[in-house]
Image 1 (cartoon, rainbow, N blue to C red):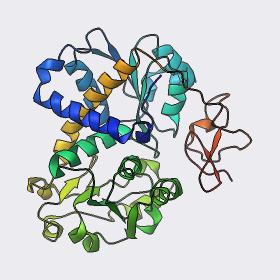
Image 2: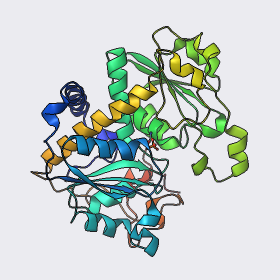
Image 3: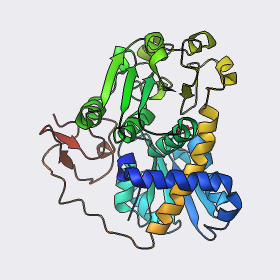
Length: 357
Ligand code: CP
């Protein structure tokens, strides 16, 4: 069964097809108003959300379908100890497609291994958020007219910012992309992204702590929130929370056609005054997310008519135990500890990408 867990589950060609469909939907909404009649989307959100959940729900309603689900873990039987695997099996009886958000890294993958319907990763802890990347790609495509030959600055919490991890994975497959990683040392990109995606792909990149130095070189600036909920230490969050604030004054040093993206929510890393700058595209980005989710739902429901059975056992090895306390394997009962061998000869957990100790 085809699901979307990691943005690289889809080829560059498939992503382009989704972009084309999303643009067509945005220009011809009436043509799509009945496409999902009698189909149900389940939104299983074990973590808060405004944009992702509501845009998924709006997407399904605008396709003529229906929505069931819950918006917090406390409203589900997870509070009684039900596993993610069982939840996925049960919801497969009621819905045609599942969108799941969880604080546990790898939760959506576990759901997809157990569901009988397509599963969409709507964010798994600090790991990945592929449907945000769909919104990001459509926005870059619409605003810049291309997805290659761009210098893209990513600023803020690159350690816990799952949207950054997924966007880098997507951009690593286009030509002429240079990424400028702007963060405090403590919030640098995690190894699984830097080694496994950036360095492996040969993507051009630089790291800096200075937004001011990077700004004049950028075609796209991707601002992110410091992810308070992922910090182990409240003191460390307080120390780092105001590392970067984009202001009107700083924007004066950016290219006249640079665009500013942000997955949102924003706290104070972009001054509200920047919203009036025509280069500020983060609200358009949120709208683009709805069109891309509509295109995604259509694609997955179409492919589900002729499902291909996934096999996992051939690709993965046992014999290690994941030590990432945010990994789904820490709490999911009887979940096999599975690892994949990577190009550098190391082994990484298939659920959260943590390297074996
Ligand atoms: N961008 C994003 O994931 O926003 P929400 O947390 O509001 O869904």
